[in-house]
Length: 451
Length: 177
Image (cartoon, rainbow over all chains, first blue to last red; front, side, top):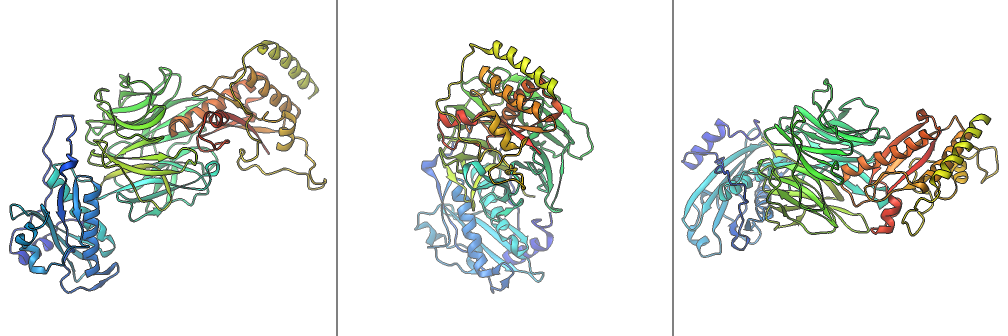
């Protein structure tokens, strides 16, 4: 929390430095009861210029010279905003350097003569404690006015988070949507031949940076899920030869079984408050959905009991309902139930099979994999209406929601080779792009926005 | 031991009569050799014997006795039922197991790549259990049989076509030392 608190010291610094009242731009987006999507008009993307952040009296930090960091932060802001698909951006390369006084007094005349609608300027200072103070300002070039400003205090090694927070504030301000860049992804890094795939648990920032392997690949790891507080990861491991769910404590580097069982456990999920774990267990070949306290001392509660495969599941953001898949009708379909297992009802009727439902953090939509020949990722409302498919490839699987419920990541398997990659798409089905991962990747799971 | 074998033979006779006339699987080609499918299996040779000699009761002996592809049964898409061909295969396995009552087995259940990951784990477990249940029904002690599902994680055939998928929807019996 102190990491990004817009603390008093920083506020007074900005007041002094800018002669203006500092404000945090965390304007909540307008509430909407309209479940239909906001259509981003991609033909009218808005162009944003982001010159390098100014480093008055540059000094070396453990993360490099603060002058270089100013440029790198501008590059990350630019690539975050561009990857959202909503904006065209012009990063620091190709833009002129600005001076410190210009940060708060932009040369609007200069920018008006260029195809630029929005301007992002800022500074990086290194404090006596060695931490960075990053100031970030958004200007409307047409109006010649400031739209928002904000500041962050971070250790140098976390400079990217300052860039993400700045990009998030700009994105939220200009689109009216909630932020999502400052978040992390857990996924499975894959390598090796198709019949002896090495699958390792790995984590990274939402843009693929700060990549880290968690497991070494000696035993197959599958289907990770970050806890809402990012302190632990649920995932499936074959470490004892059998598929079992473990909860891995990131700081301690230790893991434990979520439940002692002689039966395979798989498909782990967190409740939104992190207090409950949802999982599937096969007993004598019959798979059902269970829940158990995340504390490690509870008894499992069985939520489904139909003969057949009831599997997966995802809580609604209020924690009161669960969407899951079941083949009780004869093929995989999507069902919704109350969190206690009551009132189970099918919601997918579009033809073909439906799998891997994931409830949007905004509650308005459920993402799924539809299997009708090829595998495609799509969304529907929680009552099953309004289905739309977002991707069209041979095998796209396992959607996971950005924390703002406006972007989806999933993984794509190549026909033949079995090679996998992680992709991102927005809710209109546009702006599909591949996430950079050091090796192949599958089973992405997006965590919430960092505090 | 002897009694068991006779009992088994009688059972086999009955079941074979029962299954006669049932349909066969729609698999054009036979699956590939067992090598590369059984994870963690190392050849169990008698160190005192000459190279190539198979130790009775070993995994190699099992593979030789049950015949080519006799260690596995195949399934239709999304299915887990044991058909006539599967029954014959499992009966041969049971016969071998009756000869080596101290040997335990793991039945590995698999699915093809054209299913989602979690569902395929459940489906693989279902298939392994089908094989186990049939083996138990013809006299193999349930305590000797473990199951494990690999879902779509361990394909036997590497292609992305109907033929490969047919070979990958399988339950494979592996002996445990």
